[in-house]
Length: 138
Image 1 (cartoon, rainbow, N blue to C red):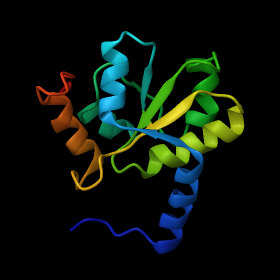
Image 2 (cartoon, rainbow, N blue to C red; image 1 turned 135 degrees about the vertical axis):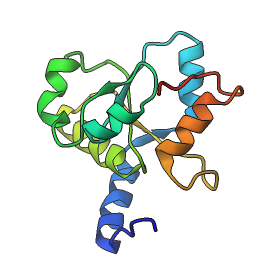
Image 3 (cartoon, rainbow, N blue to C red; image 1 turned 30 degrees about the horizontal axis):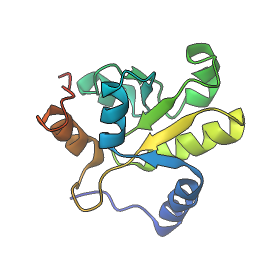
């Protein structure tokens, strides 16, 4: 059975999503196809990243990213796309980074409405699908 989030938590996430720029897997695929500079950041737990992640993504977990972002991504103009397992952690983290960094080019990856039950699981399936051309690492 899927974990049910509390209404207060969901409201916090909804508030954060109003302030962050979300992008679809197709947006990211288009940027990669055009050779645009883009840094994928997996904000899940280290064990989740170790099990599976998108190719080329670096791991900066939600618990340490605000502390470590300057070391790993010192240039505030580096385009970043954050992702997680359900879209909640990435939205909250993108919101925090935007508030802390002021002009940091930070977006979070979202699912296409109605196509997914688990965000990352479907991203992995989509990323392995021929229409997207992005291969996942297992």
